[in-house]
Image (cartoon, helix red, strand yellow):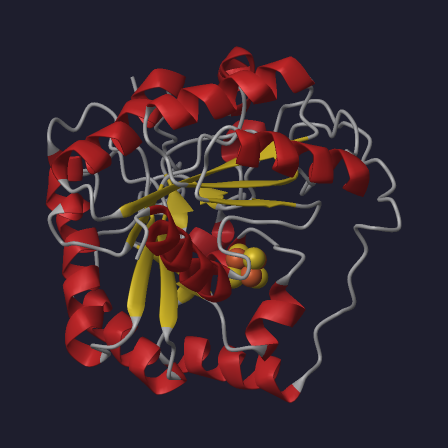
Length: 327
Ligand code: SF4
């Protein structure tokens, strides 16, 4: 069963407002885990630039959510200065309860049918050449939100026809052929993060299944080989090097083009603890190993996130495919 978190109502029977609820009700009773001091290569400056403030205004004016803010991403200063924000559709409340994630959990509100249009207009207003769209998990919907995702891709195509579109989707677990609705909207890049090694799924992604996530990306390639597929891993959760190398092999068997690997950072004391910080040299070694396994593109560094530098990386990805085809 998907992990559904039900929000308690107010004493008068009215539904509690989102801001009244604890952000992670399922984690309230977990013991605190100490947050390890970050090494020097992880620290980033607080965002203050003009570009950052402009991006924030566009996002606020369009009443959009971003995973940059919701997940407390350390790269927000750099990305937003360059007008690169990853929009998060279908609300700010997720029906899963992953132990690494800082996105609010609970029972979400109904979908906003006007959201695809607003996202398209925001992409046009920001003048983006490449946009990344992600979402919360919506296990409460029959199609997991697939039709809304597809509508958003089409609305961006209409409002900003030259922008390339990358989507970072949920797994559509137990939603039949819902994923095919999203694939048929023809994003340029279909990304779904495996996040961690299979041994840690029960602790880190309890509502998800490793092979279902892998298979989702394989289905994208089977249905539309022209779409790039992309997936990401976090390290620092207790995985071993051998396990990470095995996941790389699994991804190659599923035809995944682009692998991202970054350091897991613990959002609060109630979240999964950092097991260790992998060093920049270890990330470089992971990148070499992944490239040797045949990925078209690899990005591995402590601050790599699946949408970090996504625009520049998309151009490299396209060039790598053309080079591999001998054009
Ligand atoms: S890396 Fe991705 S999530 Fe983080 S700030 Fe940049 S665009 Fe947002």
